[in-house]
Length: 231
Image (cartoon, rainbow, N blue to C red; front, side, top):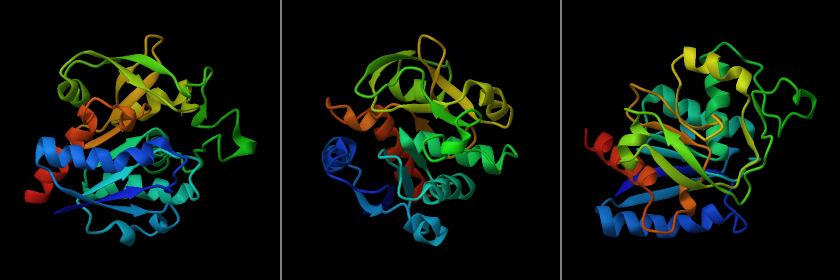
């Protein structure tokens, strides 16, 4: 059994959370990868020690998290320790927040959902058009990890999201090494990954909502977890 941390505040009201058992069953049956998943509430994740020993960290949807600091710490622990990481929806947002604060020299970077006084200059800002309940096309960068996993340069994905990276900060994050490898038809960022990391992928869409087998993004994460664990 390979243990992974599911960081988030588990709730029956979050559809992505209710899909996790079926996803784990699918990985076991289709990929012969048996993941033992432990839910780590976001306040507990404030202590990096709560994440030690896990072969992978999955920062799941469900923001606002009870602890922004816990979500940020989860992303940072995975990034710095080389632990395979998947951040989806709110996980994407907080992975970008961690990177901005600790890599890009922006310790005051804010998430507009959690900072009422920083709506105009927030790193993570409300989308001009909410993606709650929407499906949309995404164009994937040639040679990117996500393009390789999906085996195509374009995909249509499902969202339940209202926040994303403010356009004015994209170049700064990219200059420090974050690769934005998926964009919608209007050029808005939808996927990010870190080259050189064993597996660090963040998606604004929710692969958990995919119902035709295990989504390739989640399968890729599980395969990376299994590979790193073997090493």
